Amino acid sequence: MRILVVGGGGREHALCWKIAASPLCDRLWCAPGNAGIEQVADCVAIGVEDLDGIVRFAREHAIDFVVVGPEAPLVAGLVDRLKEAGIAAFGPDAAAARLEGSKSFMKEICDAAGIPTARWQRFADSAAAKSFARTLGLPVVIKADGLAAGKGVIIAETIEDADRAIDDMLVGKAFGAAGAEIVVEEFLDGEEASFFALSDGTHILPLAAAQDHKRAFDGDRGPNTGGMGAYSPTPLVDAAMQQRIVGEIIAPTVRTMAARGTPFRGVLFAGLMIGRHGPKLLEYNVRFGDPECQALMVRLKSDLLPALIACHDGGLDHLDLRWHDATALNVVMAARGYPGAYEKGSEIRGLDRAAQQKNVQIFHAGTQRDGDRILATGGRVLGIVGIGRDAAESQACAYAGVDAIDWPGGFCRRDIGWRAIGAAKT
Ligand code: AMP
Image 1 (cartoon, rainbow, N blue to C red):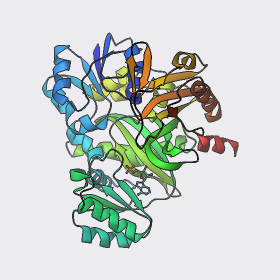
Image 2 (cartoon, rainbow, N blue to C red):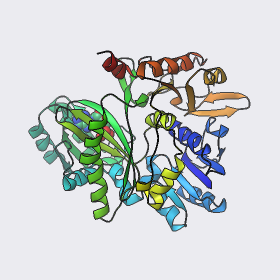
Image 3 (tube, rainbow, N blue to C red):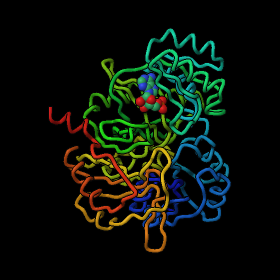
Image 4 (cartoon, rainbow, N blue to C red):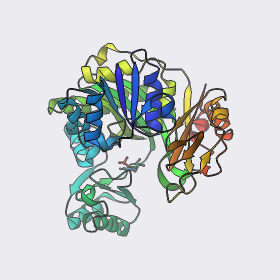
């Protein structure tokens, strides 16, 4: 098969690495890709939001199957456009991608399906939003309805902060059209985890759970980022908890989406708060997580491609995936300054040495080749995945890889996986 992967981050490097190893894959392209993806795929300079360009490329190159990495093209309808052109793709169509594209839509599905989630209401009027916020207690959570690149969620500790967040979104248009409507919801206590499951619209194939670290600095301090590291599995989600997540959250979602005539095909990435009362759904994403995907792909023993194809064709119930009985832990290396302003163009050395470390897999996120040199071009630049028997061993492997890299322009956290390592000790 001739495969095209859309995206250019660490998630897409991990997907390309796995797909390139599939006996079903004859040729692999990636749009736009990066310096790491180049080692396993032909990179083409088409941006992920250039839907016309992607469809044209897929037609001209007789692509059999497109795998869409990021959410923006899914929400914008890339899979619908490819379908019109007769090209099969992995990922939901625009109607099903609303699970990520609209927080209030996702909440309506929760209500219709009886899925446990925070109490909520949707508002376009700030006075009404403020008065509802006062009924929920503190802290209270204010969310822009649409896609806001992970920045549209405010946890307000005081009623003044809640009022300001509501006014910023609804009156000040801080998130533009994405914040023309907002969701005001109850704050949930507990520990966060992610769960990933594939669906063909009818059937579910559970993948695995993961936990990530969103804050920039050690001890989960500092500003929020796209994710500074992740690991899978997590002690927070054992077999019994997985059964509850699938039974109480994933299965009713898939059933309800199908009953509404908008079946979900692709990967459901559930952001969960796990507390005393069991798992509650914080949000859905309709694509793999980055940095979680890198850890999942390293753990996955089976060929990924047939499962992605089954999400499109149906028959996911006939598939079974095998996993390494190990923990994979991904440490993100970012450019100094990230998530604020950072420099581009610094050189990264020592990648070959790092790749030779035992039980280490390196994925590129924001890199570009310049002759023989690899340059950092993004905020999050590399993901160094260690694999080991448990979180402690996989962490040691990942940091051995990190320490072999010579990149003065970069930084990483030194404590990825601390919760899982602590849980194993107690
Ligand atoms: P979301 O994009 O909806 O997942 O929100 C981003 C982050 O905000 C989540 O990963 C949580 O850390 C936090 N968050 C969102 N909603 C809630 C909530 N209702 N209660 C507590 N924390 C929340």
